[in-house]
Length: 194
Image (tube, rainbow, N blue to C red; front, side, top):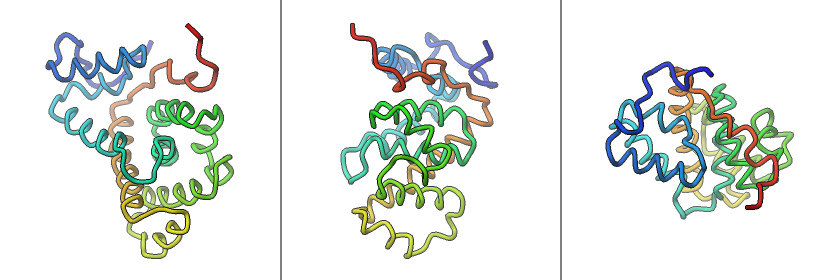
C-alpha cells in the first residue's frame, strides 16, 4: 500500500498527549483514523492551529448553513483545486449528512447539474468564485445570495470555509496525502445493523 504522505508520519505513541487524545477520539467514533490527522501531526503546533480553525468553521452552531452545506462547499471547491483527499473524505461526510449517496459525486463534477436546490446552487456558485477569482467578488455577489436566505455572516462562512480548504487542499496535494480506503464507500451503502 502506498504511504499516506510523502512527509514523515509519526507513531501515535510518539505524539503529544492532546493530539493523541483527539486522534483516538476520532478513531473511536469513525472506526479508523483519517489519514489527515496523522499526516499533519508531524508538525504539532500547525496541527493544533489547523484543527482549531477547522473546528471553528465546521462545528459551530450559528448561522444558517447546515453541516451538509458546509461539506458541500468543501467538496465543490476541493474538486476545483483537484484535491483527491478532500473530495473523497469530505464527499463521504457529505453523503452521510445529506443522506444522498449520489450528491458528492454530482457536486464534485458539476454542481449546476447536481440534484440540489437553488439555494445550494447559489451558495456553490459563490464559493467557486471565491475559490477561483476572489478579487472579482463584489456587492452583486452578496445580492445574489440574500434572496436565498444567506446573511452577511453566512456569506463570510462560505468564504472562510472556501479559503481554509484552499490551504488544506494545497497542503494535501503537496504532501501527496492519500485518502483512507474506508471513505470511498461511506454513505453509499446502508450501514450494517449491529
